[in-house]
Image (tube, rainbow, N blue to C red; front, side, top):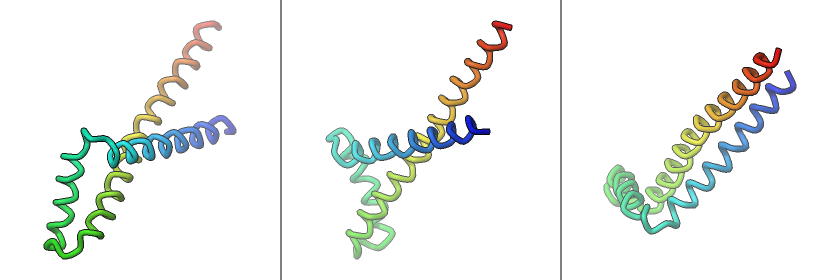
Amino acid sequence: MKKAVLKRILCAALSIAGALFLTYWWHNDIRAIPFSEALWSFHNQIFDGQKPGLASDLEFITVLLGALLITGIIAELLLQIFGNSKASRRNSRE
């Protein structure tokens, strides 16, 4: 029981750290600018160009949630892979 809780905490911590890194990269790397502009333009068109600040906020939230989803899935898969490999090694020793 205790190991399962620690795995979930580790998964959440990895997801949050990865999401923050990807969000930072999105807003600061020159290679992401075309994608950032496209996403911002999409959000700005929703409000007919009247609220560019809100479009920027929505872009940030969209990128953060998307990065959190992606890194959460990756962290969960990695923890399952490494958890199962340890269990299979234990079973092979017996």
